Image 1 (cartoon, rainbow, N blue to C red):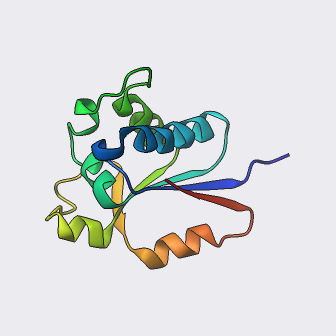
Image 2 (cartoon, helix red, strand yellow):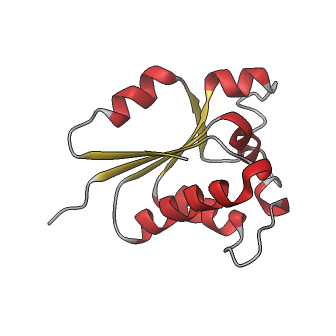
Length: 121
């Protein structure tokens, strides 16, 4: 049995730490389980596309966000929302290696692909 594609959209950052960590954890576990994973950084989660931001995130009893992000980068795709990047004046030159910037059309295409499970946090 092949695993479905998993698209995870995280809208929360440090202001909603548990919701944010849950999204990164689900994405990383998806990669570890062999699923094709696409993690979308939107809203306040957009800041985690920048080097050092995931490393500064702390939540008791949660794996380090930097480790979770690293796992997804190593085995999946991480995308920063175009509009979210522009609102925060983040450019492609600013983001961590391996993170792309793409818009809503790309998200919808991924989410509507047959066999895809899409989750929003």
